[in-house]
Length: 516
Figure 1: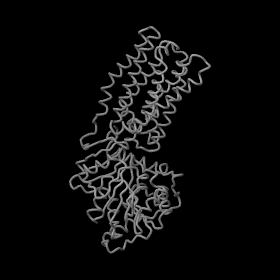
Figure 2: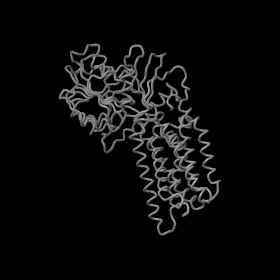
Figure 3: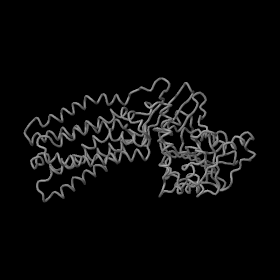
Figure 4: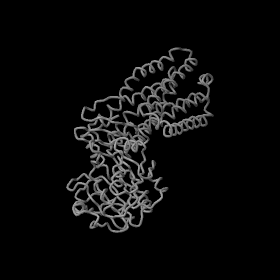
C-alpha cells in the first residue's frame, strides 16, 4: 500500500476522494430533478432520496472496508469504474423505473424509484472512503489522522459539488447531461487510477477491468442520450416548449382536440388557456376576477405565483389595476410571456416569496396568493408568519385571496380547516368559496380582510352576486390546526390530495408524458 502512495501520491488520493465526494452530492441532488416530474417535488421525494443516500453510504462503508482488507489485484479503480457505469445507468433507466413503480403510489413509488436508480452507484462511491483509508495507512498509529483527513476531504468535495451544481451547472445544463458528465469524469478517474495501480503491481491486467467497464459505458452512452429524447406521447398532445430550471421541468403542452394549452411545472398544471382565444380555462380564476368588483377603487395588486399570467392580465385590462408579480421560477415567467400572452404591467420580481415579500413596498389593495407546484403547495407559504408578512403589505381596505386545492369531504376536511384556522389567526374576516359546487375535488378560494366582504356591492351585477353566493362554502374548523413555521403538517395532511392529483394527470396526459 505504501508503494501505491509513492507512485500516486497522497495529493492524488485526496483528489480522488474529493471528486467522488462531490459525485455523491451531485447524484443525490439530481435525483429530485429526475423523479420530480413524475412524483412531484414533495417532502416524500426528498425523504426517499436522503434515506437511500444514507443506506447506500452505510452499505458502501461496510463493503468497502471488507474489500480493502482483502483486495490484491483489484482496487480503487475498479470501484470507481463500477460507480461510473452505474451513474450512466440512471438517466437510461429512469423512464422504465418510474413507470414500473407508479402502481406503488406516491410514497412507496418515490422510495422504490430512488432505491433502484441511485442505490447502486452511491454504494460504490461510498466504498471509496474505507479503501482510500486502507491505502493511506501505513501503520496503526496514524489511522485516526488518516481516516479523519480522508473523510474531511470527501465531505469538502460534497460541499463544493453541491455549490457548483446549484449555483452554476443547474441554470446552464440539463440533469441528464450533468449525470452523463459525472459518469464520464468518474471513468476518466478510474482509468488514471488503474494506470498507477498497474505500476504498483507490475501487471497490465490491472488496467483491463476499468478499460472494459469504460468501453461498456461508451456503448451505453448513445442509449442514455437517446433515452432523453424518447417520444411515445401519442398524437393528441404537442410539446410547444420545455425548459429545465432550478425549480422544475417547465413545459407548454397543447391538446388541439380540446382547444387547450397547458403550462406545467413537474407534475403540476399551473396554467391553462384556450389555444384559439387565449382565455383562461381555470374556473377558480373567475372568482378571483370578481374581487375588484366587490371592493371598488382598487389601484394596486400583487400576485404571488404567476402561473400563466392570466390573473395579471384580467386585473389590468378589466379594472386598470397596476399589477406587481412575484414568481420564483424564471422559466415559468418566460413561458407565460412567450406562450400565454402575459405582459408586465407593474414590477416583475423573480425570487422566493418568503424572502422577496420582506423587501416589497406596500400598500396593495389586493394580494393573490396562488402558489402550487410539484403536486403540492409550498407549505411554508401558508403559515401564520407568512400571512402576517402579507397583511403588512395590504392597505386598510385590502383583500388577500388564497387559492387552495383539496377535497370538500362534506365540509369536514382537516387541510381546509387548517388553512381556514391559520388565516383567521391573522385576519378578523374570512370568506371561503368553492370553484365548482357539487364536486368533491376542487379549488377553494379564501378571501381574508380587515373588514367584512361585501357581496352586495353595487359594482357587482346581480347575476355575478348570485353566481358568487352559490359558491360560498362553509368549512368545519374543528379538525384543523394552526400552521406555523415551527409546526406545519400540511404536506402530510394533503397526501391523499397529492395522490389524487397525480393520478388525475396520469389518467389524462398518460404516465409517459410525465416521465423525462
